[in-house]
Length: 279
Image (cartoon, rainbow, N blue to C red):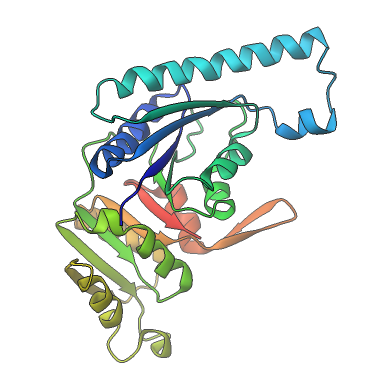
């Protein structure tokens, strides 16, 4: 298994450069097609429902400016990719908000790469709940790059948050191309005795055996913690200098409000290394 089509969110912010570099490195390693997408931030509903008079000179002027901004982002994306060995590259501009545009295109990609929300960088159509909305609305794995991290190479030390759930299982399946090239994979289980019927007699043994059949050697780490499991996971990764977290994303939308699990919320807020999430 490998990623053959990778979608990355593109804008003109400094963190975008680092997530593009990460996406390009994965594309190069997998010989994948890399798609850079920039959105104007104007929802497709504006055009479909006629919320604005599209013949209005003021609206037309505003839309032209937004398209110019998006095109400049794509120009930067194209220029950056010329410094890599990615052979198959595509650029796309969409008149849509970031969540709707990315979620729609993600249906035709193996991996989606976005950035952690950065309150210091305002981008048209990108709201503070952008990363979690993509995780919850997208049917593909989402790789999130912290806004304050520099790209330093593909991950070699990976921490997998394991609770034997469907979302965690899906995350592991979606991360196989990255796990297969890692030099260290730690299956991290917090408070395994809380739900012994879920983990079985020997927590982590079954998932370790499963991964071994894919040629992946793992360490099973069981820890008890009284703090939020997201906080405990980040602390573990900092202590062990891990490069990537693989985990299930928990949550749902309710009356336009994103309701996240505690660990998911903590990771998205305080992450310091890339995180691959699957919902």
